[in-house]
Amino acid sequence: MGRMTVAELERIKTEHAERMAFTDKTYLLLCGGTGCHATGSLKVKDALLDALEQAELGATVDVIETGCNGFCAMGPILVVHPGDIFYQKLKVKDMAEVVQSHLVEGKPVERLLYKDPAAKKRIPVQSDIPFFAHQMPRALRNKGIIDPEQIDDYIARDGYRGAARALLELGPDDIIEEMKISGMRGRGGAGFPTGMKWAFAKASPSDLKYVLCNADEGDPGAFMDRSILEADPHAVLEGMVIAAKAIDAHKGYIYARTEYPLAIKRLDLAIRQATEYGLLGEDIFGSGFGFEIEIYQGAGAFVCGEETALMRSIEGRRGMPRPRPPFPAHKGLWEKPTILNNVETFANVPQIVRKGGAWYASVGTDTSKGTKVFAISGDVNNIGLVEVPMGTSLRSIIYDIGGGIPKKRKFKAVQLGGPSGGCVPEAHLDTPVDFEAIAKVGAIMGSGGVIVMDENTCMVDMARFFMDFIQEESCGKCTPCREGTRRQLQILEKICNGDGEPGDIDTLEALSDTIRETALCGLGQTGPNPVLSTLRYFRDEFEAHIHEKRCPAKRCVSLLSFEVDTEKCTKCGACYRACPVDAVEWKKKELARIDLEKCIQCMTCFDKCRFDAIY
Image (cartoon, rainbow, N blue to C red; front, side, top):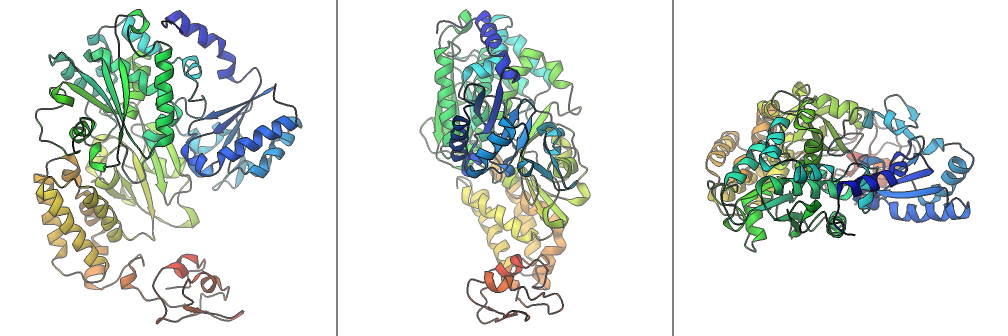
């Protein structure tokens, strides 16, 4: 294809209008994200195509493998249009029935529809399911709708219109002004105003400038960036083109984790397609402006999510942070002015430029505009990817969208902001999601990981888990982070093992203050957050471990011995069948008994007992 024009964008959109409206034929949208691939969606797709061929429906039915649908707990997922009928947890054997019953006979297969755990009824229409009904997709507007490997699908959804406006109608100052009006703050965690960052880079004189996209998503429980890249890679490319025009950069890099093979595959294809269409490369839209993008694969070091460490990694050096100032907007990649934003930030940019900053700022709070994408996981019914307006309460995210806590257990805490974030208890569940409100309760927004914990979670052990991650991922450059986190981990392990001493809590707090005040980069400075937030809200659990040698959540095995409650035991034998070392003695219609000499305290019997008879 030759040089892309606005007229050509309009032609492609018109040709694909019926496809994107799902009106001219039957469309089967099969989730093709990593989560659904892991649960067998590729085999389901093959079975679906075979069933369609046998039913001779190939000419009237179009199967589209989309990116991540978002409702990860329910994969593999299939959505049928017209009708927006949502099928979940599909298996190969289900496909013939779906084709025959739904497509041939016009009767949806009820047993495969979503069942709401609260209402205890089947909900056939996707948009009526609470998980979707309470969301506002903006960065995720194309998820589960387009084929991420077809650029025409993206263009048909107004793709590259923002880039056309930026390159043909707006000057760099106009673009930056729209970003300032939008109030967009970086979605990578720090929340720095995007327009201000771009203005600093634009004002820095240099013969070379760079635009970088941070796709090095390393937080446990975080999969926002991966899902956007898998579902809508062109949105990120378009956002980078607009940013490049704003600061007069002609080279960009996407720093992606090598553990994201599907995202990298689709991103690489998107770059090749955009280059072929003339949307990357020289003289884009005949504007005289050119921009190229290259993927750089990181080796999985968490610290390379920090901007200066990421830049050193691209330069071929060890990924270690450097002191700031100078800031990257003045001296970044190869000492040239550089802007770095994450995937979600860039995915929002095309809509801001196309619709205007005021449109974006129309939702959110006074200080946190727009929407935010979260990956919700842990002890919650609806695990998946959600996007809500800033200001939405944590309670709404966990209960209205997340569906609450499974197995009728009680909520205990939610970890926000990744390993260097903080735990928020039930008393603060009505906290609105914005940068300042979250900070006030001892957590951080971070990139958007939300890990829900129920009453069976030991908060001392949770602090130990996150501190183990932080200590392992410390680059080792500065002493406070390298040695301070190691010492905190040692103390937490000692407490969990029943060897805690009365002064340990004071030592943890003192170490936390020192690390926060003297560590070189954000990883070290926020590293003590899991310790401080759990001490702030769950100090009594630390004290029980230290003074009473007791784990209230019954999780720290060194503080436990296992016995059967004879009044609660139903003689079902589930503990006997689950024990890996034959430590449980049981016969049919008799009470179980645990041989403490054989017991290895693996928690299996405790987890398998549905009657709380193991204590």
